[in-house]
Image 1 (spheres, rainbow, N blue to C red):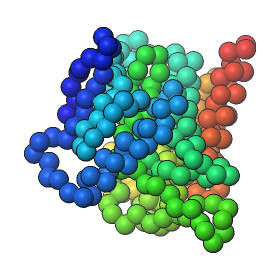
Image 2: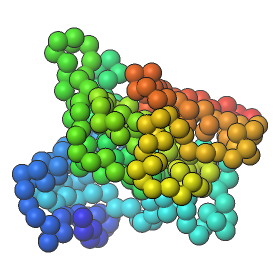
Image 3: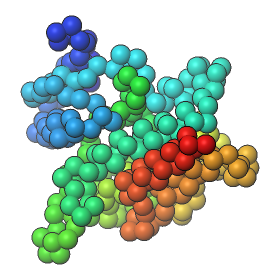
Image 4: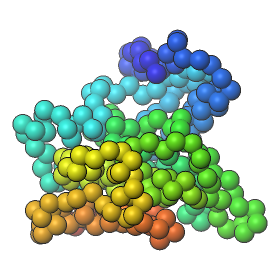
Length: 272
């Protein structure tokens, strides 16, 4: 996408459109349509970027004045020279959880989400004001309601390539998937916020080998200083990660449950 800065009554807004050299197709049209629909449905959330208008391949969006995504903050020079405090890291993790929990709450019925992001990575969170907000929904999946049971949504099979090392086991098995794939991916973002490291980076292994580790239930390594830490923020982030990294998606916590846990932990820490 190309992004331009324009103004609306003195306030900057972002105009995003496809690069001119990209080929057009019905598939691409549908992905842009889904992207706009989700932005529109989520205007009530303060943890998801706002949309102001959409047509075809173009849209008007909330402008990120800082121009910084969460990956740039965690792995940038500023954090290396002046590391984030423990409390700031917990607040960042809660921003992440709030954005995903709100996304999974779109038209949800009995706790079952109507939409799956499917591409939840750390740079999808962009700083706007004092928050990091979730964006970019054009790879997302709209869930179907299970008309047979009439109590939940239908898992789906995604048989195209799932690259990277920050996805859930079921994505690499190409088996049944639900919104819980996003919850697993969120655990990797918590890992980066806690450690200032990318998952599996310390092992320096090929993507395919890392994916095999994920399929076997092996998690990114943690140093003893985190595992043995008594710091309440470290303990909270470790617990949140474990809630996300449950191997069986049927037993995995929801993003709402993770959000609620972190909200309560932050409340308790601030109270002290």
